[in-house]
Image (cartoon, rainbow, N blue to C red):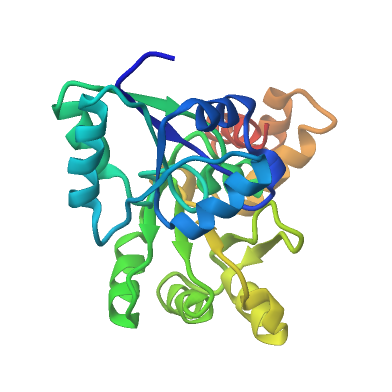
Length: 282
């Protein structure tokens, strides 16, 4: 390990077995660990059998922590930066630390691992070739409604975080702006004992949460399927579904031609959209 480096270390988001070998090795080798919550990190270190000096580096003291870390690097020490869970800087503290260290001429080294965004998307069964992460939703209803209204035509999958005490109200605000049929996946308690994925229309998910208060507990990743492009909106979903159904038994070009004959849409358009739909599902 080189001297005078800041290691940005991803830690488990739930299951402690998700710590990587490299992350554990770095935590064992650095001289000091800067943590969002030193008590939380102490529990992880105890689990790993690691004892290191800890330095608090959270939202309320990050500028001071950044200066302290730079001084420690100048004295020849190596420092690891961790958040309470997942990857630092990704909707977590660490930006000011990484910026100050970089500007001071020291290396910032990523140690990759768990990240709730990617973990949720990998099992969501939504299109993931393009997506937006927008952090936490606005805390008030007016802000959330304004946000959702602005996203009506967004074609990329949208990913946001939400807390347990706001999740139901936030989904109701989503329904009011995007409709009950808007396709969602809500991931809860990722990698933990009660990990849950709720899939379907926004209205049905709200109903499921209202019927079972346990579904309102934990930390949430909400994934919203993007709007159909203008090109796709020119073709009905029924026509596209018919093309895909026929394609299970026929070559795609023949399926598109037959669907076009029965629906009145253009063969080439159905063919192209069906290929895109297959690509999204694969």
